[in-house]
Length: 613
Image (cartoon, rainbow, N blue to C red; front, side, top):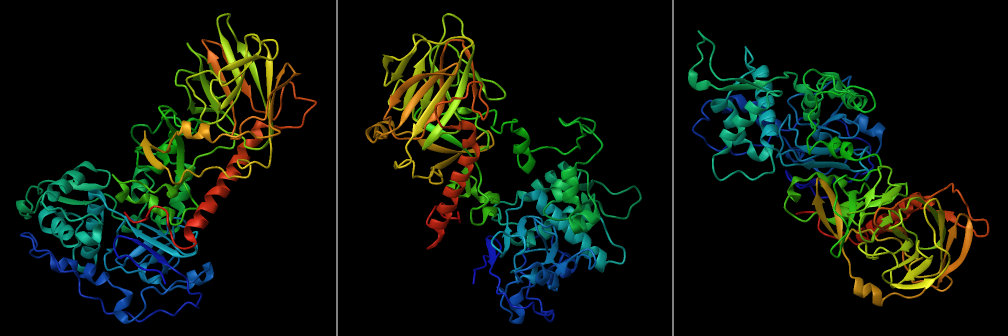
């Protein structure tokens, strides 16, 4: 039976597989948390009766708080606390909205400890046991910011006034209502520690005055009003429909798509995907696809923000380059990691993020790498053409091969008289600020005199090539080497760094160590082709390793690469696979490596970096 970390941790509730129990009898509410006295708290307790009674736990009536919900959708719908369109919401109770199916459930449906929770809270992640990948119910409180705390406080005060007052209020005093409420229920509203200095009351006023799309502000009483001046400023909610308040409330407000039905049954989320409209700046601005965009302000916390900034071929425009002995691999959240919702924790700020929460970001198309190149080289938008500049420098492809026979083509688009090229294959540790064939990790064919190069040693191979020529590059690697039998590195043991809102695995290059461990692969060979003509075997018994198509250019020549599957001069005398096939092949290999990593680290309990900060 899983443990429950009340208030600040994840709740993993293992299903018992039993029949759903009938509605339990109403429990006597436990004593409310001890209030923190303030000078302005007079008269506040009477307005908080419903909130304290809402802080109920399953343990109060002798029921095991870890009793699980059903393991299928039929059992889940039969739970007494589930909320749907027909039964309606249970406002004033502690309700949770599933982040996947968007249905609402009362917390006691799953036996979740609500001691440190409040009605109308928004700072949590919740997945019902039908939607969560593990089949268990998942609940995690997150650190709330002042805006979320003010929203929850005003929603609770509004609900209590509606149910208790003869003339319900919509505006509440900062000093007599809002500050006492937040002070009393601070631990229930956020996982953040209570500040030592009482500076937060001024900050919440600034927050509510700034967020005018959420909060109403009234600084002074109306002329002739009997309200005392000391009760002001007063604040209220712009949207008085409390059923709209949930984890996606900010997105609703930003997209100008607040609707009760959307909050109840998830239509809002489908509406977001379909697009919305709104008034104000940007309402008439056209999207790239010809549609209209709403007034939603894109921020770095917006989950759509990073995706919209990606170029068509899926790599950030601003990124770190592989240089100075370090290599950088773009990372993305690993959906197969246990409890991937840990990614949402604010508590990782300023601390190392566990690498096993992420995986290497791969794409199904083989292209020229934007990061694995010398910065002075210019790559086209389609990532298939490169232009040289000044001295020799190199770019590798995004995917490499470790076994089998592979082929690609390069077209010499422009080659002025004073330029040159060395083209071929390179391992990941090949020097990017040197010509291909400079070290032990690369093999090349030079345009001038057709010389072949390896370890900076040039040997005559064929006639040269120039502008207008189409060159073919073939490599054959044996299937029985140690490299061939290995899966690619998961990088999950590497450090994660953040650069321009994206995360990257950082890997140190140990070139000297790698050179000493190189060993030949018997039976391997590299062959070059010129306009369809086989130029003969250039290299054989090359070093074991993962080889990437590579281009190194001298000065301003321009070349284009074709990874297949269709070639201008497909070889007739050899069997091969086009490099384009390696796109999905790499995705499969990396996925298998990631899954095996998770299995190995979960057999006897997690041995990778700890989950809890």
